[in-house]
Amino acid sequence: MYSKVTSNLNWGRNTKIYSKVLFPKNIKEIKTLIKKDNFIFTGNSRSFGDNSINSKLIISTKNLKNILNYDKKKGLINVESGTLLSEILETILADGWILPLMPGSKYVSVGGIIANNVHGKNSKKNQLKYHVKEIRVLLENGKIIDCSRNKNKKVFDLTLGGFGLTGMIISAKIKLKKIKSSQISQKIISFDSYKIFFEIINKIKNYEYSVIWINSFGKNKISGLLYLGDHEKKGGKNITTYSGDKKLNFFNYFILKTLTQNYYLIKILNYFYYIYSKNFFKKKIHWNQFFFPQDKYKNFNEIYGEEGFIQFQFCVSENFLIDTLNEISIFFEINKIHSSFVVLKKFDEKGKYLNFSGKGISVSMDIPINKHYKKLKMFLNNLIIKKKIRINFSKDSLVTYDYTKTINGYKQFKKELYSLNKTRKLKSLFSQRSKL
Image (cartoon, rainbow, N blue to C red; front, side):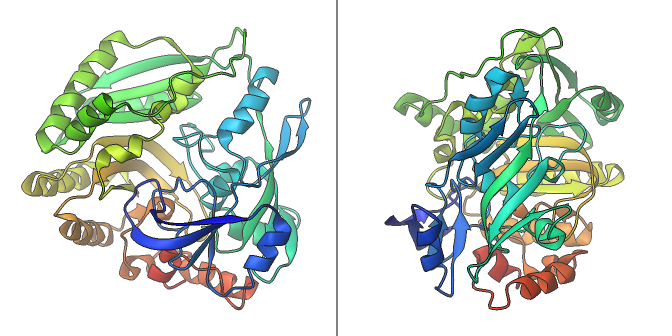
């Protein structure tokens, strides 16, 4: 077992707190560590928020990455929780299988995506919970529980989207998706008004995958690109390899850092990307480029500087989308704050406890942290309370208890956690901030 002390504990690099991180080799070593009274588990530390950060001790599952079983005929794979999605894809793509749902990066762990019940580009059933068949969980008292929708269902439901507060996910069995080709047939539709935006989002239901990139918004105006995709139906070679994933060189790092941290330059960059993409997009695209464009540079998060950035995601009804984005735009303009990356998604998902759910439009923003951060936190907290907006807690690092306590499912989630782990040794900055 080895350890390190570090302050960069999540992908957003937005939580500056030094903590000890331990890397046990097996379950036996982990059982020894959980005798302590204040700790949390983490996977590959790719979370945007602070739900896998503890100020005293963080136990990493990086060394638990074995593929326990892979049924090529039935499309079932059982893996240890430290396994990365990239490692699973390298195994299954050649056999005509793909993960049924993927978040924005393939360098995240299986345990992490389950603990956060991640969403992706799926147009239907856009929650990981639909595709996880079984999980094995190590409770804080050392007991190991196998659970599914039919066995120990309460623990299963609590753990999927439980932010790591039920225990350590040892392993998981996932149902894979059969494909004829890993290549994606892509269609891009541009829009430059809310009228066109609301018309074209109805096309989403006809495609397997969809996501909306926003070029600009505010003053009752919006422009962007709707990305639609399906796996190639004709079949062909299932490409397992992917090229281009590397670290930024000094020149690219300097350019991107300059652009993403400047209120005016990022607007210019987005405009040229908008013009180029809508006119020169590829009709057939590599799966890696379609699902994981931001993985192109493995240290992409560093371009936001030492203070890092926050990713803020919320769901707002279609009726309040324009007013909400207008209000955000006005605040951004006054304080010269910007989001370097804005993504929208038509959203209609049900969920228990604190899972991200709701009906309407999901809005996700990457916001660099600057001198106005305290003002930004206050503004966003007031906004979500005033407009009764549901946020994605799995990416959050700034919402206060005043908001969290009002969410449907909060009291039940807290009650069930105490029922499962009476000593409550599992703690994170998120759980403490939320008084869970």
